[in-house]
Amino acid sequence: MRQRPIYAEYVRSWIRRPVIKVFTGIRRSGKSVLLRQTADALVAAGLPRDRVLLFDMELLDNDGLRPAGALHAALREREPGAVLIDEVQMVEAWERLAPSLLNQGWEVWLTGSNADLLSTELATHLTGRYVEIPVWPLGLAEFEAFWPAERAGAYDAFLAWGGMPGLAVLDWRPELVGPYLEGVFDSILLKDVVARFHIRNVALLQRLARYLAETVGTPLSPSSIARFLKSQRLSVTVDTVQGYLDHLVAAFLAHRVPRWDFGAKRHLEVGAKYYLGDTGLFVALLGRQAPPNAVAENLVFLELRRRGYRVSAGRSAASGRDEWEIDFVAERGDRRAYVQVAWRMDAPETVAREVRGFAAIDDHHPRVVLSSDTLAPALPAGVLYQDLRSFLRGEALPAPLS
Image 1 (cartoon, rainbow, N blue to C red):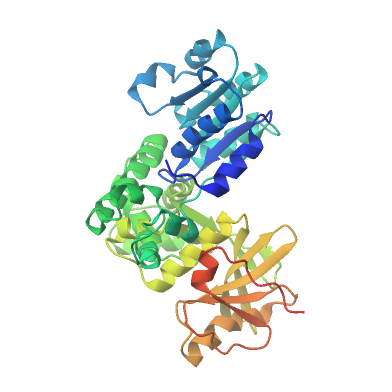
Image 2: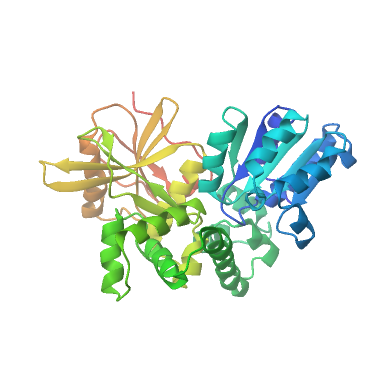
């Protein structure tokens, strides 16, 4: 099992801390592997191996332990050590079990693949007693570390296939990637959405997911989506669309990004943007790689979130008429950056379109354009350029101009 250094270091920092640790993220992003590696880290830190207990709740062998009382009874007579539960949302009343084990002296590590369930229960029952550790698909630097050293083409493969760690198990064979990613999508949809939320109209849910992939980075509302689906002769209500969107977000298949209005200085209630939980889902949902601009924008979103930024989409209006967009308003602590993403900036009209939204900004935080151009385009004063590949590989966003 290959280590992911950024997570390995963070895990070590939480060992022996008296809080519940929860790995969250899209299915197949590597949470289960991290949990097994955490078990090894606990042993390396001095805990005897027979006191480190790992339960994979998707295994048939553990069906009898899904009631919280049954799992609690299995642990009651043992000397407390560490208990690690994979896919904890499958344990009935897990939100009562976890703090009970913590109170009895157990170190508790969990994984979960349903943001709605986990966030609700964690906030309700475990306030101040847990830490959430988001697990994202591989970033470019990690992907290149996984990629065979003797082979070229890692960046192109990353753009085409996304960052699911399981791709390494396929030996990077292109003929296997499509079926694998389709299987990942089907698994998430059926286990984390259809079964969890008792969805009846699976075909509608699949069409909605495909529409989100087709419109990545476009402001959407439940009503606009419902109108589109009706134009496709699908019977659907706005409330159903809203519910299905919430379920896809809860399963980390999609991420909802609210829009920030520079004029009103507030988040808008409608017109959120949606990005896929991994760009490999473009292949699964569309049967092909998406347009480069959509892939680049989605990858930048994921990289910003991977780095711990809170992300909004910027909206401004010129003279109260034309609506101009800034792809991302990224905030972390007291740091903020305004980010535009364009696959190419090789035409004057493209440059003008990408930078015009910056005119609404009245502060000194950096305004950054990311693109894949080999040479930096000519940009107006105060607008910074950063190479897309360098950013995705881990290079920090530029600091504001002095």
